[in-house]
Structure formats: structure tokens, C-alpha cells
Image (cartoon, rainbow, N blue to C red; front, top):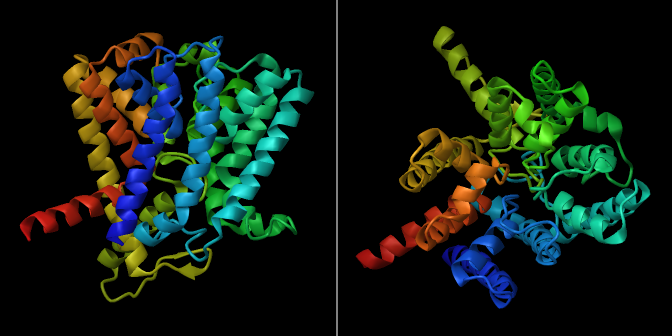
Length: 379
């Protein structure tokens, strides 16, 4: 287990280092190049590269590579976190998952071309969409296909992976995670729609934030503060457990709410025996324990990350917005915050990169590494 932890962590840092060299060769300082590579690989949409720059295409390719690299680390994450499996009861070969994402990638290229994109734009947006990196303004002609693809990438891979050949829609509807997604999506879309945005834009932004893709339009900043706050909360929640979205993931929220309900019932009926189940499958104490540990660790690490950013950003509310946007891999930042972020000193960029990789690897791997290093030092 310790060797696997070290291998996974070193792999991601090595991947970020290798990904930084083309930026470095293009004239960037190495810390800036490493920071850009880490942002792309961890599916964070924030970038200091203009869309018209030819390196923007490389960033999109790097983001796609990070998405597929994450897929191939899923089997180990399943063993470590104990709750990363599909609906808590099955594991799938990473090549099968990667095959589904590759099919979606090819389909998205064709879809964008059908909706009026040239081949270059279709390739770039397909990379940014499938990796859920985003960080780009969506052209008006691509709004519909982007919404369609984000909906698929947020929920479908987790639910159709087993039945993808038969397309068992009835089985999909029975999944608690899917029903929870529909409820959350409808509620947030309505909340955002009552602001200055249209209902179509509200649906687009709900998908963009819930998937942590971070696509946006110039009208985003017309939304009121309450709508923006709700959208950022959705980015913390994230999508389905097997998707490459950031955040806590929907299934963990469902289990936590069921645990809360269980404890409330125990207060009223101390002798009652209540079991937590998802899709009629009992959730073991091992899984519920790790979910609670993950939620505590995620919240603590996010708070520590925000405190760290507050050292370099005087306004704490700006530091909080930047921290949530980066840690959830959303990457949407107002122009002034984006400028401030890329003006941070080199040491800050290295530390932020470290936190982004921690977030991408579900936190547990690094805690295990720290524990292993601590034990070795004591020996």
C-alpha cells in the first residue's frame, strides 16, 4: 500500500513537471510553467494563456491527459477511500471507463462540428469539455451541445457503465444518485433563474458549476450574490462518484444525509436498529466511516487552503472565492482575482499546485504518505 501511495503521488508530480516543459520552452519561467501544467492536469479552468495563443491548444490536450490519468488511478482510489466504487457495490476496469470517455470525446468533436465549429475549435472544446476543465467563454452556437455533454459527464458514466450496452433507462431512474442529481439540478436552476439570468442561462450555469467544468458566458456576473453563492456550493458538491468532476461527490452527500437521519431516529428511539443503504444495498460501517473521514478531511484541507491564500490575498472573501474555485477544480474567477492569482510569488504557486494535486487524488493518498513518512522518521 505504501509503495502504491508513493507511486501515485510521484506519478502526478512527474506528469505536472513533464507537462511544464513545453511552457518553459515557450519562454515561461519554470514555476509559472509548472503552475499552468498543474492547473490543466487537475482540470482547473483558470489559466493565464489567451485563447488565441497557440499554447492554448496544448493546455487543452494536457487537460484531456489529466482526465484520462485520473481514470487510471480510480482502481487505487477505490481501495484507499473505500467509497469510490460505482454506487458502492462494483468496480470496473479502468480501460472500460476510459473507453467510454474516449467515445464521448470523439462524439463531442463531431457534435461541435455539426453545430458550426471548425476542426481546431471542436478539438479544443472537446478536450476542455470531456476533461471538465472548462475555463473558457462558450460561443453561442455551442451552448446546447455543451449543456448536453456536461449532463452526460456529470451523471451518466456512473449509472450506465454496467448497462451501457443495453441502455437500461429504467435502471437509471432507480438510482438514488441520479434522482438526487435531478432534484439538485432543478432547485439550483430555479434559484439562479430568479436572478438577472434567463432560465436557459440558469440551466447552463447549474450544469457548469455542478460538473465543476467552469464554462461561462459574460452574463455570469449579472447574477446576484445569492445565486452565485448557491452555484459555488454546488461546485463543492460535485457530480457522480465515478465521474472526473471535482468536489465531494453526490453519493457521499447522500450517505452523510442518511447518517444524519439515522442518528436523529436513534435519539427518538434508542433501541431501534437502523441500517444505511443506497439503492437497497447496505452501506458497511467501513464505508460510512471513510466517507465521514473524507468529508472532515476535505473541509479541513479546503479551509487550510483558503487560510493559505489569505496570506497572499488581503481580502479574505476574495481568498475564499479563489480557494473554493481552485480546490473544487471549477476554475471560474473574476478578471481581478485571476490577475492576482497569477501574480502570486513562486512559492505560493508551488504550494497551490501541491494542494490542487491533493484535491485531485482524494486527499487520502497524501495522508497515508505523511503517516508512512512519520513512522519511518520515528524508526
